[in-house]
Image 1 (cartoon, rainbow, N blue to C red):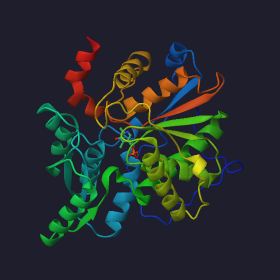
Image 2 (tube, rainbow, N blue to C red):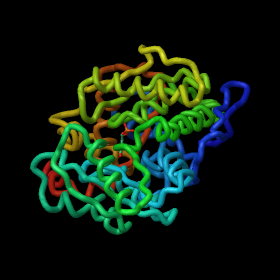
Image 3 (cartoon, rainbow, N blue to C red):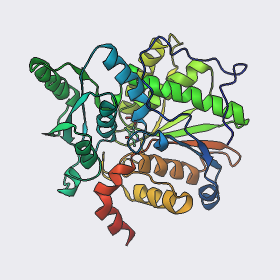
Length: 347
Ligand SMILES: *Cc1c(COP(=O)(O)O)cnc(C)c1O
């Protein structure tokens, strides 16, 4: 579709000039129709925002957050990024790559969050790429507060003479979420530029920064597209509460208005057995996106997000005339760590 600058007559512009930021993202990422999938499902008009094409180390949603996080790290004269994630974290992979881009070191705490995984899981996919980018990492048993564990690692590294900058899991604090406020503005601009109104935006939600940033950004520009987050990890209520809290902090940074509770929407029907464990609906969504649209999803996040989109279409949640935008948050690197399981499900 045609791309255009945000339409000043229709939406207000967010002023990001007060924040440190580095350019990492190929933007705007395209919005494309998913005509074959729409037809196959007999549902509304489905579109996809290609944030799997953000351009950093096989792309994904962490790129936009890292523009602000690395910006802040450089402003604070850090020489090292320290963060945490599950073993197959896309966030750690993108953070490792961003560190390389600016000559920073990167250290990650990798949580063994997903039970029963094999040696491939701890060496291929994102872990392989973390090594390629020269990140150092330590594996850790699953625990309740991995941000505290990673912050302690940062303290230890500081004592060793490094200048670490701590990034919470998923890059999800108000600084990182600015990346998705910026994406919200980009979507509003693309929508206005193409004369295409979206009635819904659907995305996977995990550490909450993506959905929080989107809701904050849409509110700040005065665009009322509702955002449906598909939980990949936890029940609706705690997820709503973490998205809401972070959206509030992000809007405060932007000096925007408060967010009504009714704006935070989460569907927890596609989590399956838990974080990092693909459900049958996840594998179906990965397969359908691949075979209908030639699009690669992942088994932890975007596959569950797409399963949510498909499930909502099947429940007639949308009107037939709706234009529904799915935010592809990336993650395909993790596919390789799950290949045996996916191949088995397909056979
Ligand atoms: C991290 C991640 C998400 C979830 O985004 P949050 O901001 O953590 O909610 C979704 N998809 C992919 C591929 C991710 O890596």
